[in-house]
Amino acid sequence: MRFIADLHIHSRFSRATSREMEVPMLDRFCRRKGIALCATGDFTHPEYRRLLKEQLEPTGDGLFLHGETRFILNVEVSSIYSVGGRLRRIHNLVFVPDFETAEAFSAMLGRYGKLESDGRPTVGLSSYEMLARLLELNERAFLVPAHIWTPWFSLYGSNSGFDSIEECFGDLSDHIFAVETGLSSDPPMNWRLSALDRRTLISNSDAHSPAKLGREANVFDCELGYDAVLDTLRNKDGRRLLHTIEFFPEEGKYHYDGHRNCRIVMSPEEARRAGNTCPMCGRRLTIGVLHRVEELADRKADAVPADVIPFRSLVPLAEIIAEALDKGRDTRAVQDAYNSLCDRLDSEFSILLDAEPADIARVGGELVAEGVERMRRGEVERIPGYDGEFGIIRVLPGSRRTDGDEPTTVAEGGQLGLF
Image (cartoon, rainbow, N blue to C red; front, side, top):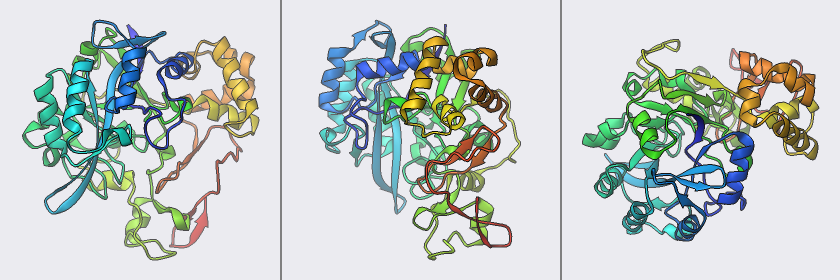
């Protein structure tokens, strides 16, 4: 069975998250987007876990059902601890097959932090110890390091991470069979590290609002059950994980180096020439994902190892429509056009991945169809994100769509310029 899975989201009980992030609304948006399997997020939060028990029906295969959407019990945990004289801040995704394990894991985690204060709990427990305790509770439970390149909170993060999986997880490293690449990197960037060759690369939305569901996702062709998904990831099975759905990585908010307060953005080469400091104020730049990949890479940028899982880079449909209509992404005109397309052409992913351009043009207009075609060919303009600011991907020639002021960059020769 072919299906799309988004395995990292948050509920309304996480900070800075929409109040619409509840199970009934998740089901509604998953159907609209074409997502069959969705993470619950936040199962360690006591009130949300109570609601999950009320609103989800067990399917008997480790998943749960609401409406037409299956859910997998999941939480992102923020661990803050010291190793080797350095403070580490690591985010990990935890998956469990039943509420009994969710209860036991939450009880254990509650000894290290206040679970009711945030759906994504912050605890003083190391990644290694958390994985060890998880495996003691249930051998079918698993842990996936989240958005592994994000500067501030990730396994390889430039500010508080590690240089290897082994440095973080020690003798439990073999239990890390999958990693999440995050919005600011794509598979080719991760292929540059031979240490990741035997790990499955997955991509997820990390959505904080329903509209962001599926902005990155995974396309499976296997039984829609917990153990089938687990086995596919554990074995990096390219017959059952067909491809991942990716942002163009420049759209991620940490792709390039930069300093948001001064509106400065730099490529890794430019940042190195500047001593990794802001040319406006002299403070240290936030070192982005591409720079960090280059620091740890043991392959060239065009390397393609054996047995890689394919990927497809997409632009969210609402962004393509906004560009075609020359209107804001969240305007009524864009939302009406989006709903019309999804109503008549099945789902957002059906439109982005499979729909015939003539059908898209008939319903949404020639410019939307052209934007989808250009996106599929990778013919896009890319303005990289940096230091917490999302980048911009433009799919139509001559478009000037932007969601804010464009940053200052350092041009060749060290002169300040504009994108």
